[in-house]
View 1 (spheres, rainbow, N blue to C red):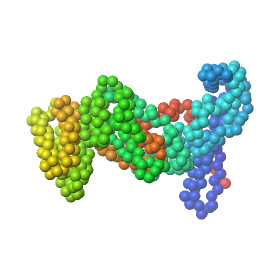
View 2: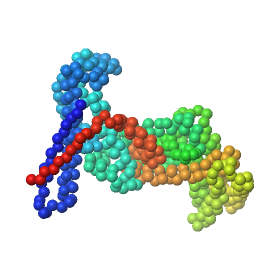
View 3: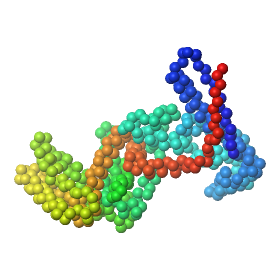
View 4: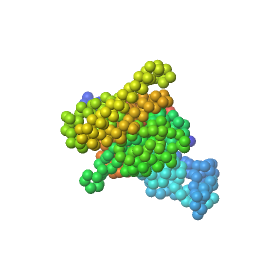
Length: 457
Ligand SMILES: [Zn+2]
């Protein structure tokens, strides 16, 4: 069907006085109101016409699928109706602003059920207030604020005026589970060259002073083309619980070469998700600093040791196809690896001799998993040299943003923010797909022949 809408606008201007801002302000304000009113009118007219068609036997049984009266779960596709009158208008929160639309009822001549047509006709879920697009705008604005102030979306949302509290409620209650869908397919896992686990603390809202929540993330990285695959975010679940869930979700029999961990207590359980563990090379010197502090060293005393260890563990792997790397270069890396191992050992011994027992035992523990990536490269040749450092950066960035954005949120909200952020930043295609599936836009409503005419009086 076609619904014709005529808009007429009389703009009254003060001759010789008016400025551009006043024109834009007035026309803009009218435009926003007119858009909302036009949408309301189109919805009302469509609803009315469809009911007329159905009641005169010209409709289609698929237009109003409904549960048959008195029989739960059984759908009635009866195609004969009579009008059942109007009920109070329904308020909708939409990307065009709040709408108030008519709700009309019909009575099914087949099963006798009396029901409102608005929901089934326009695919509006019962009790859902905000529209899909408004929810998307809100989710994006709320995860934009702290790192990209301003921008078009902020303005768009300001026009619709979503109160912060509603926004937070929609975010926390959102169905974000399916954002990680597809991340556990066998094809994806076969292409993973590394897994990364990291955690970050956040201040909990509404709890006693000083209690902190732990947010934990897992991500995968593929070889070429290099792509980050968000695997999951958890709030206040132990690495052991996370490992269990990951084992259940991941395809059987596929083990990526390494899982990179930052050395947080309890993380070693994740070792069963990959062939081997790589300790985060960024964290190792930092954690040595902490051990030396425990041994009573002051900052200026600690620093040379931290620098020394950073130098020891740094082994640059050549870029490019492993097979095309000259043999001498591989032998050189092998030599470097041996040298680094010996230096680390010597450093641990010197700590022991000086009585720095925390530092000595830290180095000995970390030593096992410090050079896994280099070993894998020498052994199999396929570990992308930069993957691990790339993931380290990802986790630091995520941590910073979540700490900032999630600061005023309750646990469920922090988790929602983290999931949305992770997908938006590292898998933006997935984010688009998620919404286009929900929006289900197939061009079933289009505006044709819009004209606009002017007359001056
Ligand atoms: Zn029926």
